[in-house]
Length: 265
Image (cartoon, rainbow, N blue to C red; front, side):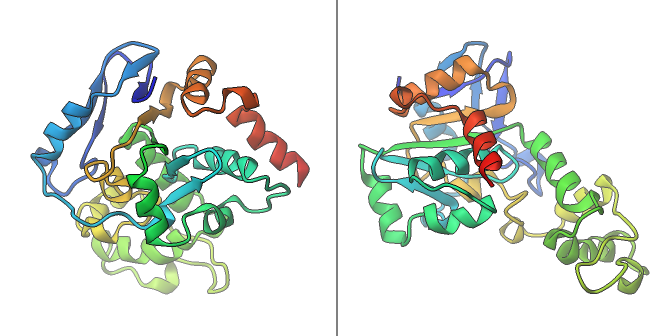
């Protein structure tokens, strides 16, 4: 079943530009109807990619997780169940007692660009992206990394002063945070302010929590075998995907792997 898109939505689309500076330039890269397992429309992707600026370079090798034993290459994307997928690749690499998942990326990623290129060119590798509706992802990123001031985030520390320079230019930085050591926000920018700032800055400067799929995973340069839409991902679709990845005999579950690793800490 190589080349699947999994979805239950009536008409699900993924914008190749997502939150672009030019809303009229948005182009749907994938469109598909209500079936549990969809044929991956590679001709459609090629058609759309022919209409946009071609990026000749490949993405950063750190944007991927690789497993040579099972011939798997996965482009991880923050705010799209990436923790569960990192847990899966950690399990396949026989790694346990994981403390912080984001640190696993350094271990599970291709160690060099050459290793990534070799895997991309190797037809034996199963290559996939996991996505969600771009608008839901950007809302999730805002809520977790900007709005939630019960915790310190590097995104709030770095970007909130920049947001306010656009939306509230008279606001002084010392009024934004309660301290300089692991500070918390005293004033939280609204979602509208976040978006107002976001569409003014060059996409190349976007943080990985809200950067564009097109920039992060380069679907016009890499022939992915599957795009998985996580919005309505259910157990039946997970079984289909595990079979397609050659992992069905291992009796793995993304949810249970994630839960068990947390439990072992």
